Length: 360
Image (cartoon, rainbow, N blue to C red; front, side, top):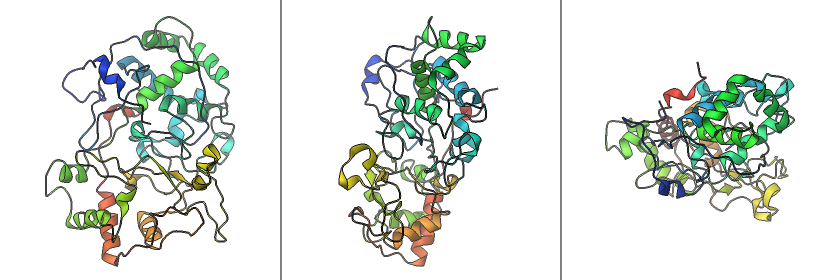
């Protein structure tokens, strides 16, 4: 089992489930009644080099059966109204679990207004979606299914479709025990699978945490120095690097000038749509920079096509607007610094679990 990186299947003590919920997405959040609990033996999802222990909610401990069920659901187009879209359509494992487009495409070719974010390491976010409207991966899972411009199918219809397939009935019973298929069970299974989508052990991790001085190129090492330097990149103001691990995000929401047109008008209110707090206007969640080389285009609207464009954008001080985050200021980067920063970002490409693609 690829999500179990230790030599044996490991049981988790109940105390480990008290680690707080930390969780991404691009649609609407789905609400559900709690109650269903996995019935199998909990398993440990071992984090690769450079990542902390995986936070797990106490009411959804991962099991081999819920992870396998979630993997099957993730790739099943029957969760969309016309049978054309699966979760994997916007979160493609061959493209860093995003889709390579500026904005997500749903049923009947409808275009969303935001980029489909990568699901790699989504387990660590304290809130999901660009605007943070879901409190967990479980809460996030139901949103895109019912969103009319994404998968466009009401939850009860999805439940009926799955219930009509005897093989799914057996899988749900194996994972949760006897009882009907419910949205809660679907969401918990998808969330457990998504928690296995971890990516670490990159050249940076081997250099920084594995203490292998040869793991990164000279350009990437210089780029790391610029990344950390408050007078040059100042990138760690939002993209955090810790002593023992690096998430490359603070999990918070910032106005970085994206979603602002040339006149200064806001084109997307971002986090403000949830909080109604003025400082949150056009603020969006800080994305992780891990695997950034695989997940172009960039920003919540896909407006920057390359890593070089992203570096140049920040070097120019971003787009001015009244709510621009104070940390966003013009930075002093030479042409060499900019090239080195790109080399460093490319060194954040890590491993992907082997059992994360479509099930056979």
